[in-house]
Amino acid sequence: MRADRTVLITRPGARAQALRAALERRGLAPCDLDAMRLERLGIGAERHRQVLELSLDALLCVSPFAVECLAALLTPRPTWFDSVRLFATGESTREAMRDVFGRDALAPREGPAASEGLLALDELARIAGWRVLLARGEGGRRLLSDTLAARGAKLEELALYRRRLDTPAPPALARLQAGEYLALIVTSAEQLDHLAQWCTYAARERTLIVSSTRLATLAEERGFVRVRCAQDATPEALAQACASFRDD
Image (cartoon, rainbow, N blue to C red; front, side, top):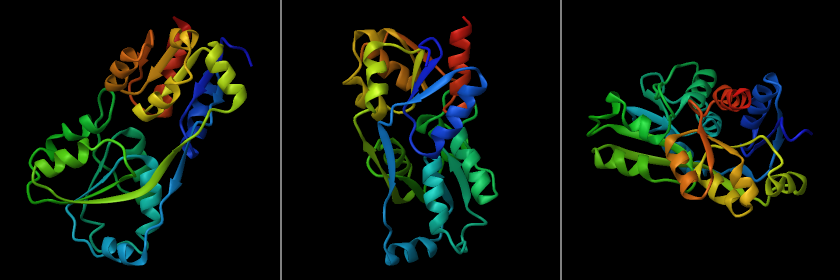
């Protein structure tokens, strides 16, 4: 695998497949670090019943995997589903909600999309008294939860999965430490902090593609020299950022 075409990716699960395909369409060679995986959390029968019987004004999903996990719980569709407002933290999650639920969701559409972009939507500015279900992973940032609660929402959180961090696969780890690749793609602060422990000077000198300005700032603080921000976290945007860099 030629270093001038190799792109190291950290995205776990099914989402990695779409990213690999987008990179390959642009003549690049994806190499999976296998450093993160997603595990569904078990939801007990009583909690499942509570979710189905909720009376909601809004449903927020933080990732495509949250959508996938939630869809399995919402069978049969609860009475609140057809009238609830749907929100997504980014374009990939919005697409997943449309594909799985057959309805569109509101999401940030310009610039790097994340929790900050979602909270900036006018539709979420005045939500005092709203009954909101937040479908998310275990742990992670509290920005969405804390801000929605501070705005007066009656928040119900549903942790659907956890992230497992692993040591990168040996061949890919050797590439990372030697800096023998075109670019590294990172889409979360958790991934960035996890991989940073193996990033040598050579790795920090290589191009790092991130999915938000917040991540770009964090990466620069951690010593990465060539940080480029994709338009958003979708596979096409991340792959295009790599291709544009290669063509410079």
